[in-house]
Image (cartoon, rainbow, N blue to C red; front, side, top):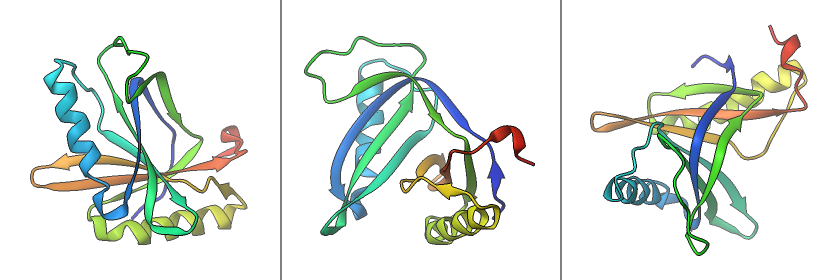
Length: 153
């Protein structure tokens, strides 16, 4: 895995939050994409999600899912989701995981890379999930706190 220093920006974003068991991380993605298609809304980005660990609940997490759309949509006041003009993940470092089993290695690699440069990372990583035939490729982004991206190599 290679660490890259780049940010990610996605426009016209739908955002949904879920408190779910970690092993069910993929279920909201399937439902979100299905609902968008059923409403004739076209998504233009892969599903991006952030995991925040919960105190005293190691098997559950707060998952926030983001999907870029082709345009802004009307959101009802009582909707289960919100809309953002854009999602900016950066300044950030990231790695690509060809296998889901590589996620722990990716986290460790990002932390080592940041430590070597004296950078502090935000605690919640962003995961960009790409469908590849019957498999998933995942990019893992870590936001660098207070980074001066002008000085990056």
